Image 1 (cartoon, rainbow, N blue to C red):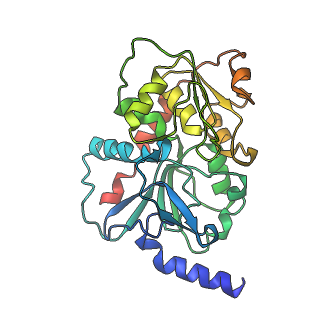
Image 2: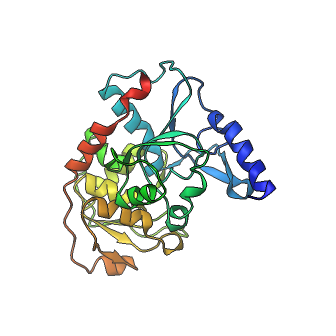
Length: 295
């Protein structure tokens, strides 16, 4: 290992308990269970660290970590402010596993892409992961291949719990279709677009729910649509054309062939897919929530 790499790892190990994920201005709480989620940030230090921005809007899928965490801690009558024996780290919704360096408990998180999937082993020398549930079988397999214990791990993305948390408003008229574009690939507003960056997650879910079809290049646009019973088609406008996280979710529902369209027009011409039954994934998440962290 090069000297610079050793120095970087040393600094990370010494500071990792004091920040959420790798976000230098997002501090943890000492001797508490810390919820890790990824707000709007800019990357610094060649992408090794991030800096939280003062943003009025957040990415929908990431922001849902907060109401999901509130729901689960309330369901199990847990005090989020309870003092515990040491500083603990809980990773939940999103592709977070390789975004931080903490010894962490994983509940519903995933790996972002194929590049991350092959670099997991680089961190296992200084990091312990307590894996309770992951987004899908692709993440599960990559963790297993790198020697991480997944023997008691369940499958499920926490986004599928949202119908247990929030009942959307019913509009008088449903839109024939709506489109969600990944925030990093959005160049201009398209017709019938629901913006994935939002200052009101309830309103955004209302718009998804009141659509007859969702066409989405953002994963949580697809997950939320299906969770609320709305058919969804993947729009192949994704980062680096890497479907790892999409395969991860679809495979978790037993779908190994799923519709992918290059344009909105193409998506409107194909057969509308059936909505999968997500009840088992919901139960997996409920059963695997790490209540023992508060002991």
